[in-house]
Image 1 (spheres, rainbow, N blue to C red):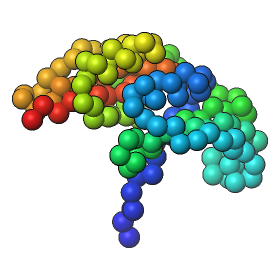
Image 2 (image 1 turned 45 degrees about the vertical axis):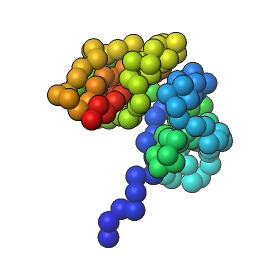
Image 3 (image 1 turned 90 degrees about the vertical axis):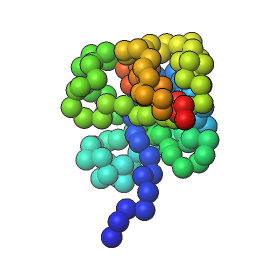
Image 4 (image 1 turned 180 degrees about the vertical axis):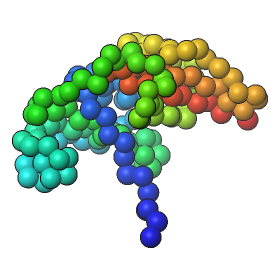
Length: 146
């Protein structure tokens, strides 16, 4: 049996509204917000007393989703500095295809995003970069050239 699809990527945040604004500026669409808690949430996460707010965003093509979660309880645990380098073990970025990478970076900068390195070009195929957004989230951007 194979998987059917990747349903979503989840990211825990402290500032929900800022994270939503960042990803909406990127071009994602807010599907909805909800409160999650209770026995099912506890069982699924392996935590006790889960109470969190979630927001689900989708890409314009409708095929990919991003779930943001802000925990009210149990308390959020810091994973260390938010400006960690790219080579830390674990999930390190979410990559998005964009039409105009320079315009996208400029728009995201109004939401506090900063380039992790610099804008790079891979042969005549792609322009690529990583930006660090809210909560230290690293987002990859790729503009296909040919």
